[in-house]
Length: 357
Image 1 (spheres, rainbow, N blue to C red):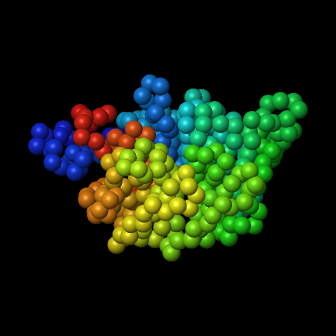
Image 2 (cartoon, rainbow, N blue to C red; image 1 turned 135 degrees about the vertical axis):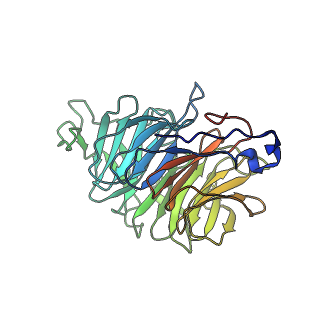
Image 3 (tube, rainbow, N blue to C red; image 1 turned 30 degrees about the vertical axis):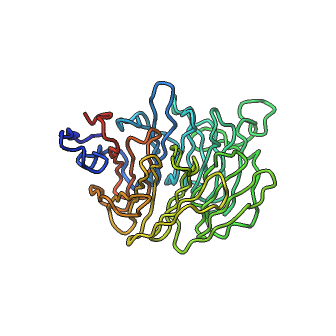
């Protein structure tokens, strides 16, 4: 990784947009193919947090979320990795791959703990928002939303996985236990899964241009919303928000629009913002009341005012479409992942922060 030297903010920068537009982004190298997804952990006890990246080079990477410094690479997938997520306590990582598997990793050792075999490409993975999770949701070209309980059947002699075959990296291939939610409902590949703040609710974004809210108790959709354009990103905003808006907001990029839904009231649309550009990804900073989009038809990052729906700034630096954008859990920076194979960290606060002194 080779961060660029950050600029010092001048004393006259108080009137600049969030005083961050003059700060040079940190560029994280290491991937050799397009970066498909980024995900931050929560802030941990020592005020540290982490970021994981999925990439078509088969090798998801873990980094320090503040500096972008490389920590390690998870080795074992034999195909492009489409999505990667960290558990809220950052102890586990999950990845979904074109090698027809999802994997669960120990983030301290890099060991692959479980290989969950599928019959087609896995595009999406999600942990429930709780420490030390025991469940993983997966989806992809099978058009199936599946829930795996990986607490059962790992090392026990009586477990269902103890007699399972092994994958090429030597980890056990877990064939059970898992169950499908809503068989036959999805009409296209599932490209994103969000486990809502209510643990009995899961949200899926699908290539059939529909987002569905699911009740895990009866395994049926609560409500379905259809979009005009192809859905790019679908992610949960976890920052707090003022002025009476919900504390959790689902941000969706589809076509040329950004959509913001309540994450606690299924299907409740808060706002739609139309832009002149095709957007692949969107992330909301609720406290600053601004959101960021990554272009699919260009290489630019744009910052918008959430209330006035105005474009405030344009950031250039990537050399390909921006497939993923995500705010850090403290909201002081955001990360972008691009077709050009790089990750960039962009300052989003007035005060000195991290490597921006």
